[in-house]
Length: 265
Length: 199
Image (cartoon, rainbow over all chains, first blue to last red):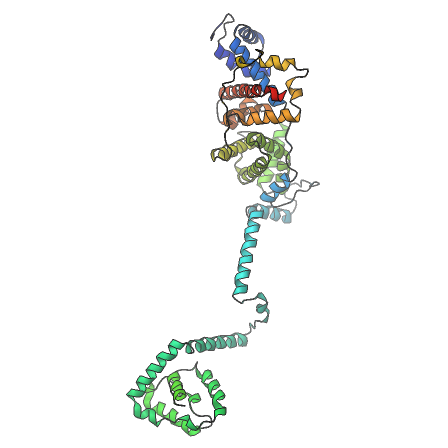
């Protein structure tokens, strides 16, 4: 491979000037030396021919037409706005509303994208579905009484519901039954003195249950009125007096007395 | 100079949150970016996705654009090129580079490529206008290595000067010229292999 010929130019120099030569930027003696080197060097001549041909092939490529919705998609993903063909470029600082709008658009640009909107939609759908499964409906909020009375009523009704649920648990009931049996063994005489609702008419069972339910939420140290037979004031007073005599330590829990009376009945 | 100042003012308005300014930038440069992405990736769908990514990246980093260092066009081209390189490194686009084993001496008829091209009634630019030829040249361009491909795209398709290409590619100007020469030569050789198909 000839590195230098009669023109005095080396192949490396020729290669370095190739770009300018193809662009037509060589002049004077440099151009003459370059052409002379080509005449005498077949390799460099071939290189110039190929490079020239490659450039022509590339120059002949047409400009690709971008998709029509490309600008729309770009603007939607950046500023979340749709392109307007007749949009007038308003000078900066036209009004306070435009300024705020521009600033907000910049701040919310990362989230104002279709991807975020899709994620937000999916999250909203999931939450709504979970609330629906849980039995909570947004329409219930309209009927919500937010007055002081309403809130108090809701509080106490919820409390009573929770206590009722707790009392109706089988495990709790069995434990209370065991405790009651133990207490009865420990104090058999006192238990026997308590009135037994044997003569209670069957028609009063429902009222008795209702009253017991009403008393579930009361303090265990108080006497259980529902445990006494309906209308039997004497028996009720006996229980009350016994409870008072026993004092707070000996007084059986409210629910235990109720259960005992139920069992006895 | 007035154009540069107008572009710089446009950028400043855009940085302050002027949506209309941003829309103007998108309208002005989307075609150029799309073409660079299309010629580099070879796929219209990939080019559209990449163009969107370029503008999203530009939108987030436009405040870092320094008007004193380079023009907006050079900066946008740099952003585009960096994104393309990132995608290429991730393996999204396979490199299909043929070797330069095809030499002019391998021709059956002993004619050089230029002689063959000169045999045609019209020049290469005229012949390349046909759809089939466009497709072959486009496919040949995809077979170039990324370094050569990006250099010839910026020079011959985007008409950038060597200085700006050197800024975009972050290599010396001499390296840019060398890559352009090699890219053109390799493309011509690849097309020479398919010369019968082209003609």
